[in-house]
Length: 202
Image (cartoon, rainbow, N blue to C red; front, top):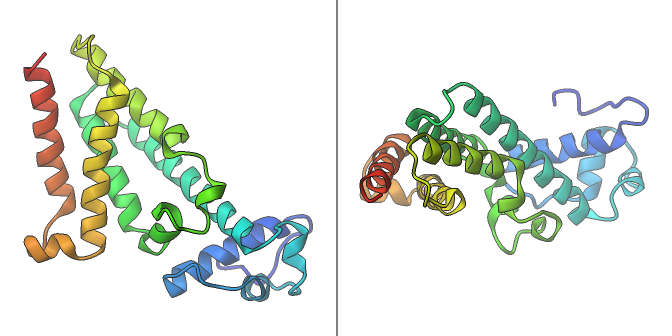
């Protein structure tokens, strides 16, 4: 990412995506022009259109990169814990909170319904990262012989906790209610209580 001003032959597309990522990180906004991305990548203003029809297409590629990174982080976390363990499920929630909190500039692009990349991404439940999380929740259910549990439904409920806390922390609302709130600690307690409740009612 530090070498945005040059690219290898045939790698213009990736150079432009990296340039777009850097522009978003630096400004906190996806409101940049194609010419700005081209300048940062060290190419002519017309060059980006060899790979992207317009700015919206470039932003869609950035969104894809975001989800690829999330999927890799989720899988790495899942591999680090015993299959079916409570720790695995909670760690995946923490991984999600951490991923979002480390990339706040990308939130509007990725998640807002009006975001310019929204039409170019698949639904979140079709993402490899989310499917891996559903698999981990399914492992947790099977280890406890909770045969009537729906892993997808449980995963969505757990995800909503992680996502909600992440957003509240990023926009400052969480700290307005709980000064210096620790989103990770709150997730541990809320998700942990939820898992306990699922076990107790089966």
